[in-house]
Amino acid sequence: QVQLVESGGGLVQAGGSLSVSCAASGWTFSSYVMGWFRQAPGKEREFVAAIKGSGAYTTYADSIKGRFTTSRDNAKSTVYLQMNSLKPEDTAVYYCAASRGYYSTGSYPRTMSEYAYWGQGTQVTVSS
Image (cartoon, rainbow, N blue to C red; front, side):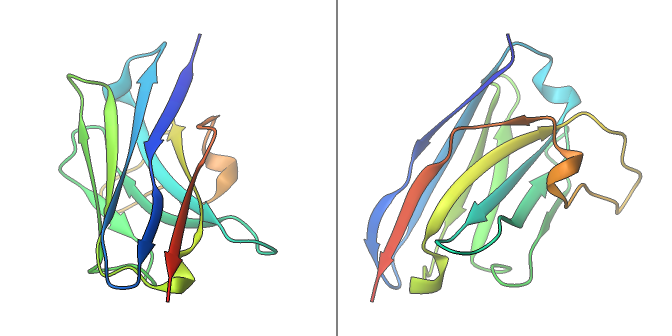
């Protein structure tokens, strides 16, 4: 049974840091591109970051570039999102997701439809 379980998140003041983890089970973790999305109240879910199976290649949305970092530990089947210099507009439910598709060099899955499996989401709230 394929499963993604997120942990972390919470409440932090603007300028602070938080980390979110996503543990996977039920498949060959290293074969999947892992992505992060977020959904703020009243808004559509948006792409945040993605990391390829090897962990060597990542891409980020412009809104969080330079502040967020995603990484993965394939031995632990876990992907991480480290969020620094948080802003109130980063407040959202954060989701991890897994994509089984093949993506050539420089190409990444950035839309929800490209991801087959999703975590339950975890709340991140940034106070001003």
